[in-house]
Image (tube, rainbow, N blue to C red; front, side, top):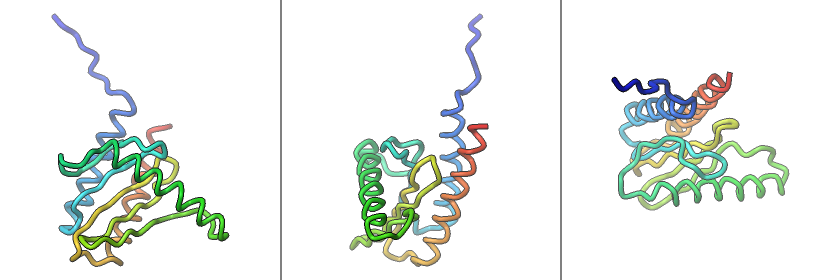
Length: 137
């Protein structure tokens, strides 16, 4: 008989719960096209996005954007950066701080209502931050 260790590591549990939360965000808004939780180091913790996206490159770029924007905000005394909104011709992308765990990246269609998207993204980022804090305990 083969007895495998069926226990998941805390990182695997966090990734699974995070993916579930991200799927919930996509289900709540038909305009959300892709979403990912990216560590401050640029590693994808979990994502819901198309296979065509190079996840490693995407994660690294999101982390770089967040780091640069955070420095710029501090340079002009804006305090800690909470969110970056990128307005592309094919829809907005939001990078929202998710506590100590990283940044929540959300790409939406041009039809998305920005105010509603900001609210949903901030609520999801808060939930992911709380989820990560619970996993540490």
